[in-house]
Length: 392
Ligand SMILES: Cc1cc2nc3c(=O)[nH]c(=O)nc-3n(C[C@H](O)[C@H](O)[C@H](O)COP(=O)(O)OP(=O)(O)OC[C@H]3O[C@@H](n4cnc5c(N)ncnc54)[C@H](O)[C@@H]3O)c2cc1C
Image 1 (cartoon, helix red, strand yellow):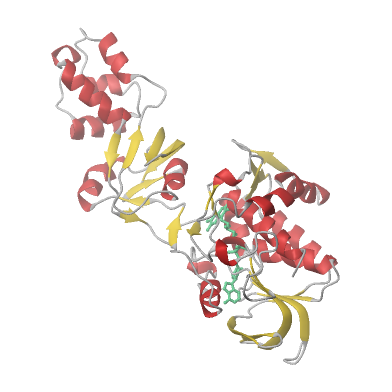
Image 2 (image 1 turned 90 degrees about the horizontal axis):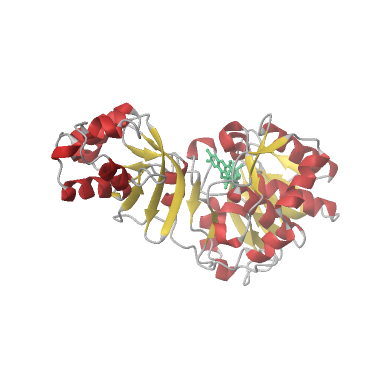
């Protein structure tokens, strides 16, 4: 393609949302060019779900998304449901399974999803340019996209450049910059679905727990999640910790129930006369190393029959409502997503087109719609890409 070639639609970003949108535009007979600065398409799909891509969730509803406008995502989600995605996956004979809580993963590999999208793209006659980095966009009569491979023009322009997390695999702030350049508001951005870092003091104590994983309930404010937590050398990770990071505000405390299935105070009182050391009793409920560190740190070692009722209540409270204020999170380097993005007030929830810039569309993670862990973010990428694909 030479620099004076014009397409109906240019899509910047060959990730989840960009590829699905490209297929839909192509099916409508639009001439489409997708460009991406990476060497391969779908870099985040590839690493998603630990290489098996948790590509949708059977329980998708707007309640699993965080956005300044919680209603914005409803229309797109209603038109592209988990069933729609599964029908596409089944058409390509990709084996999948439900792991837990509606989370759908590939049995073999996330590459199956990329191959499926690539086949659909080719069938829809969509052109792809890789190692093609968008540097600037202008709009006069048409959109003009300046790249390292030349200048391209189109009637419609779709920005599908994703969020800031995992910069090592091609994430960039290009979409946010372009939104601002065209006068669209961008809400505050922050890393989310990300491990926490403890204060240096807490790190010193709790690094002895590194590698231990527990079933717990983690809450911050009114939000709570049940699932595994994993102690790291510097803080806390694991699904329940990642989930709560979406709602956690810097400086806020985390409240953790370390034994959500057990009434530990009831257990203490049922053994009231026992000469057993508290630590030995707790070792029956926790991994041994955890019980040891917890006892050394949080209480004075004594047998149960020499521990006062008040002390027993305090120990139970520390187990069921352990409070810790993280210093922060690990940031974009390990975050699964960027929370915040192009303000939904600026976009049509039906088409994803900017209300004040005709022909300019934003889809996927670059929008201020962030899903919980469990396949919701990829599903938003498909649903928003599909919505724009019917109009761009
Ligand atoms: C480790 C990890 C695991 C994850 N696992 C899951 C999971 O199992 N389930 C789930 O639902 N979500 C998961 N996510 C989140 C999910 O992958 C993203 O939310 C989703 O891919 C976003 O889709 P997108 O199309 O908006 O952006 P992306 O898929 O990130 O695509 C953006 C594309 O734009 C390109 N680009 C950026 N800037 C430019 C530029 N200037 N010029 C040209 N191209 C550019 C990038 O190279 C990239 O290919 C995971 C994320 C990470 C980091």
